[in-house]
Structures are given as structure tokens and as C-alpha cells.
Image (cartoon, rainbow, N blue to C red):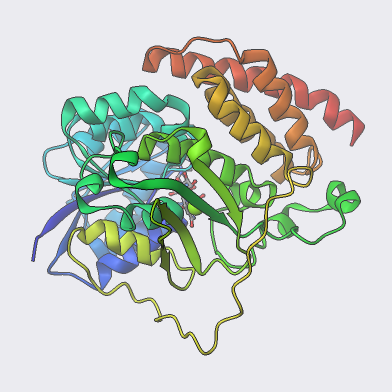
Length: 403
Ligand code: NDP
Ligand code: MG
């Protein structure tokens, strides 16, 4: 049994809490050395009491002071409480952790995840936005440092599990054709609005968009699942993780979310990874890899599952998915700008400032505007991310007036 010391970035989120639930089941196997949250002080306080990390990072001085005070009241004085982006990068690279769970949401996760990569950690990648925004630069950094990349996103974890073992060891450099693989089949449920009349989509509320039929997730990724931008980000993520061309990736709608993705081989075999839709499965897989551990997930009951269905994607219903697939072929400028615009648009939708269907309008105009931007360093990524956010924020003012 291999023991791992963990840093969990974004420990108070949906992936973070699921990670700690798996860790809780295996106290001899995993130790928590550092945790991070943005503003949820009380949840972090509970995690500090249960998991006794050495260091915790919060999003602001105020949140850090509030946590320190609450820890002091409980007589806990041996946890260092820091705050801010540099402290996140520091805990991700610190010597005391060998494994980093990258589960901050959005492009705020880029620098801490890169920091873990540059320090050569085992990096459990949930924060797909980091890979989408930096693509080749991220993969180059993995190769240069010898970091071990393990996908947490359920689809990519499923694909990873269906690959030959040798290819699992070299993300970003896989040679799928040499291994007789013809295609990656990326499954998606279609989200909560798959069967809703298309002309009603502009009326849906944030709570309706966040009510995913199969998965319980944070609000940003839940909206992305409803627009299928999430599948678009995953398409780009798959290109980089598995070193494939866009034409080798096919999106398949599978409303039950029991099959989490598939790999098609040249001889006609299709390997699928299945299970109940519970993120603790990919999390436990990556935490213990290459060993297997109990994740607390109910085994799949084949006599009580709904019949499996498969459908082609209707891109008119999901224009954001088409836009992301196109961006994947256009280049890094388009992908970085799309991710940034989408974060702004989703935040505005969640705040009820724009309509659900306006998300696409903002995303499309941002891709068109920034498509020829060159991105050749992480500084370029950060600069373009900021420019695309500013551009998208301007776009949404006129849409807000129309709402
Ligand atoms: P949540 O919104 O549930 O959690 C986000 C975490 O990041 C929280 O700990 C939050 O802290 C912290 N955070 C938020 N904003 C910032 C910021 N600006 N700086 C630093 N930390 C911040 O998200 P999820 O857990 O759903 O998703 C996390 C990542 O995993 C995303 O990239 C998502 O795409 C990916 N993912 C998630 C899946 C899921 O099932 N949820 C499935 C596959 C991938 P606080 O709690 O204090 O706000
Ligand atoms: Mg996913």
C-alpha cells in the first residue's frame, strides 16, 4: 500500500468534498497536508478540525483572519492560515505534498495547477479550465518536470482506464493510432434541457439550469452541462490529454450517464468504463492509482438500471458545444478566449443579469474577436484571459439591457 500526502486545492467545493470523503475512508493511506478554499470559512473550519492540515489558504485576508479566530477559539494553534494566489501556488509546490488535487473552479485554478505541475507532483486534474486555457504549454510543462497527470473529469478518467497501460503513463504524448485506437467516444447526458422545447430555452432560471439529472456538481459546471459547453471544454481537454486530433473525438449523447466514455479500437472492440454517476469513483481511481480502493460508491445494479440510450448531438440545441469544437481546431487563442468569456457569461446568468441563451452570444462574439491571438507563454494566457473577460463584460451590458 502506497501512502500519499495530499494538497487539496478547492477542498470546500463539490470535487474537494468528494475527495475528502474518499480520504476519510482510508486514514492509513492518505494524509492531508494542505487545503484551500475561497470564502467558505465555516466549511473550512470543519475540514481543519477533521483532517488537521499543516497549512490552509483562503481567498482573502478577511476570510483568513476569520478562520484563524475560529480556530483559536477551539484551541487549535498549529495550522498556518495564509491567503491569496501566491500562497495557493506555494502549497501546490511545497515539499510536504506528493499529490495535488487541482479542484479550484475556473481559470483561477491555472497558476496553482501549473505550480504543482512545475514542481513535478502527481497532479489529479479536475480543473479542466487550466488545460483548456493553456493547452500545449501545460503539456510541455508536464513533460519538462516529469509530473504525473491523472484525469479526474469522469469522461477523461474513463478514457484513461480504457487505454493500454503504457499510454496511461504518458498523458499528452499518447500514440493512440500505434495502439490500434481509432476513436475516442466522449459521452454526455445532454443536461437538464435535452428534451425542452428549444423556443423556451431563453426562459430557464439558474436553479433549473443547475438541476442536473444525474450529477451533483458546483454551479458553474452545472450551467456548462446545461449548455453543453462543459462537453466542449472536455473535447478540448481530451485533445491535449490524449494527444488526438479533433476528428478522432466523437461526442455521443447518453442520457443515463452510466457509461462515462469509451475508446474504439480498429478491430471493432469498444471499451467502456461504467458505474453509477458518482465522482468518488474517478477520484478514488486517481488517488490510489495504480492500486484500487473502496470509494464508497454503490456498485452498478444491472437489473435496476434504466435502459441505455444513445443519440447524436443536435448542435442547434447546443451551439456552445459546436463553438468549442470549432475553437479546438482554430487554435489556442480561440480556446483561451472562449473559456474566459464563458466564465463571465455563466457568472452573469447565475446572477440573473442575462438569459440562458445569451451565454452563446457572448461566447461566439469573443471567439470571433480573439481568434487570431497568439499564445506562446503562460503570461500570454493570463493577458488574453483578462482581455477576453473585459470584452465579454462589455458584451453583456447590452444583453443585460435587453433582458
Ligand atoms: P465548486 O464551485 O463546487 O468548488 C470550487 C472550489 O474552488 C471551492 O473550494 C471554492 O472555494 C474554490 N474557489 C472558488 N473560486 C475561487 C478562486 N477565485 N480562487 C481560489 N479558489 C476558488 O466547483 P466544483 O467542485 O464543481 O468544480 C471544481 C473543478 O472541477 C472545476 O474546474 C470543474 O470543471 C471540475 N469538475 C467538477 C466536477 C464535479 O462533479 N463537480 C466534474 C468534473 C470536473 P469556496 O467554497 O470558499 O467558494
Ligand atoms: Mg465531465
